[in-house]
Structures are given as C-alpha cells and as structure tokens.
Amino acid sequence: MSAGPPAQTDRDDASGDRSSGNESTATPVRYEEVSKRYPGADHDAVHRLSLEVPAGEICVLVGPSGCGKTTAMRMVNRTVEMTSGEIFIGDRSVRQGDAAELRREIGYVIQQIGLFPHRTIAENIGTVPSLLGWKQAEIEQRVEKLLELIGLDPEFGDRYPSQLSGGQQQRVGVARALAVDPPVMLMDEPFGAIDPINRSRLQNEFLRLQAELGKTVLFVTHDVDEAIKMGDRIAVLRKGGEVAQFATPTELLMEPADDFVEDFVGADRALKRLALMRVKDASLWKAPICLAGDPTGPVRSDLAGAEVPHALLVDSGRRPLGWLSERDLAAPQVPSRPDTPADPLIDADSILRDGLATLLQSGSQYAPVVDGNGRLGGVLSVEIVADFLSSGEAAESELAAVDRPHE
Ligand SMILES: Nc1ncnc2c1ncn2[C@@H]1O[C@H](COP(=O)(O)OP(=O)(O)O)[C@@H](O)[C@H]1O
Ligand SMILES: [Mg+2]
Image (spheres, rainbow, N blue to C red):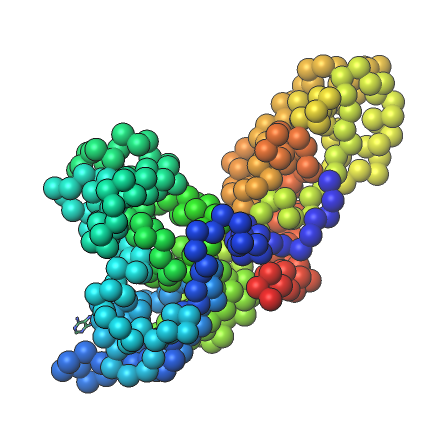
C-alpha cells in the first residue's frame, strides 16, 4: 500500500506505448482554418476551425446541438465538402484524390448504425473489403478476427441485424468501421441511442479496444460526461463550430477557459473529476492487518497510531476476510471468522466516483481496496475522496500527470 503515483487514467497508460498490437500506424489529423457555409445560410456552420488531433488519441468534439460537430467531423471524409481551409490526414490533404476512395479508407460509425438489414452480419462487416476487391478468403478471415475483437461469437456472422440487440448492432457498426484497418475513425454520437447501462458497457469496451488498436479517433457527442470519459483531448465547440477550449479532460474540469465552457461542463465539475482517477491512484489508507490465530496483543498496539482505527483479518494471500470488533480483540487470539464482514470490497481499477458510490451505499466508513487477485491494496474512506477534491495540490499533480504521457 503506497500513497500512489499522481493521478493517471487508463487512457494515459494506453497512449504511453502504442507500438504493440497496432495493426497500422495511427495518423494525426489537422484542421487548418476550416470553414463550412451551407448554401443559402447567412453564417458559417463551422468557422475557421483549427485543431490538431495527435496520432493514436481519441479527440472528442463536444458542444450543444447545432454547434457544428457533425459538420466538422464529416468534412474529414468529405461527406460534407468544406468551403475553405484544409484538413490533413498525416501529410495528405483530404482534398487530394477521390472523395469516394477517401470515404472507404476512413472508419465511420454513426448513431443510427446504418447496417444493411438484408445482409448478414458477416456481409455487413465485409462491405468495404468487398468493394475494394479483397479475395473471399481474406474477407472471411478479417470478419472472423473482427467478430472476436468485438466479443461476438463467430456464429453471429450468419445472422441478420434484426436478430441482434441494439448494443450488439452497435458493436458490429464499430467492427465494420475497422474492417480495412483505417488510420482514422470518425464516430458521431455512436452510443447515443443505447440505454445507459449498455452505453457505459460499450464505452468501456471501446476504450479497451482502443488501448489495443491505438487509432486516431474523432468522437462527437453532446454529452459532457461521455466526453470526459472517452477523450484524451476534448474540443468544446460553441455555435458556429468555433473552439471554446481544446484541452485534456482534467484541464477542462480544473480550468474552464470561460463562462461558456464552465456552464457547459456543469456546476458539478469538481465531482466530475472523480471520473478521472482510479481508486488505486488515490492516497489510500492503511489498516492494521492480521492472520487468524495471531495473538491479539500486537494487533491492539498497532491500532493505536493507525490511519484506519479497525484491524482487518486477511488470509495468507492478503485477501480481506473481515474487520475485527472489540469483542474479537478481547480474545487472546485473532478468530478465523471476525464479527464484521469485509464487504464491500472495492476494485482498485474502478474510478473514484464508483468507489465512493459503493462506499456510500454500503453505509460503511471504510472499504478494503483489492486488486484483480483480491489482494488488499489499501483502504478507501470518504475523507480520502474529500481530501482529493479539496486539495489544490492533488489538482496540480493531476494536471502534470495528464500532460506528461503525451510528450
Ligand atoms: N445539410 C445541411 N444543410 C443546411 N444546413 C445544415 C445542414 N447540416 C447542418 N446544417 C446546419 O449547420 C449547423 C450545424 O449543424 P451540425 O453540424 O449538424 O451540428 P451538431 O452536430 O453540432 O448538432 C446547424 O445550424 C444546422 O442546422
Ligand atoms: Mg450532430
């Protein structure tokens, strides 16, 4: 159990080393003074947008409805043609070459999914490879791999979209977009039509997938919580497709650039920071630990100066078994079944917000934090969370930690 390194999220870990498991090299995307005015409109839908999305990162475009997010995104694959400016994918302007070809090269996932109802799942996923004239055997191989990647059984390949749940269809939409291993993925409110529980599951899945693939992703949402969860970087847009702030999630929450961003992020932005930190990265407390059969004398003296004023019984693998009561401690030896169960146990990898929720729901003051093997890593208390939220120092180191991995 240690004080832990400064806050770092999974996403930061993932962007650290993208070399392993990558299919293709990710490519940066750069907007240079890009504007779009629709015919007959008296103002730009997107106005002189300049933005650089580093290779292998998820950049979220977020903002109120009608502010130009979809327009900004669609100019990348030229499903909307820009009025002026340039967009580069790597060194290449999207204006070079054929728009239809560009569209096939870039993965595109939308809320309405857009699966072809009369084609099987395998045919849907293989749409672009087929258009590109891949051999049937190659297509089948690719489809099989992608089904595995999105966690669907190979037998799903023969089904039709209507035979799948909304969440499964959305996964297929992601697989289809990944079919030709695109250097860039465009995702327009991809999980917007899914119920909250499945939505959260799909978000987690996509983050896991992205940790493996390291694509450059442009992700559009109007939901600031989704932006904070998904984004390595977030561009908050205001009407007219202008960038109000382009920042990491932490920066956005800590230092909103102006009143518009502050309003948009919400009054609870301090609490939203709890979604940025894993429980294991918090400064967890120590409880005295003991094994069944230990003499209680030393345990009682350990309790005197302990951060957590209760002793925790663990097994030989440091897995928590329960808290010792006064009565337990009055006996000469530590019992094998203490009075109070160790529950709830908190997963060290969960976000601090969920850890706090578990603690509050259980009504206990303290909860053991365990790793994937159930081993004790420390103890979470409400005070730890409160200290984290009120500490300017934590905020500073958090900002530093978020900035570092991108260097
Ligand atoms: N095809 C179109 N023709 C004319 N105006 C459009 C078209 N698509 C979008 N717009 C307008 O452009 C602005 C930005 O729209 P959009 O990019 O869809 O915003 P968002 O995705 O942020 O909701 C809105 O005012 C919208 O009415
Ligand atoms: Mg839109």
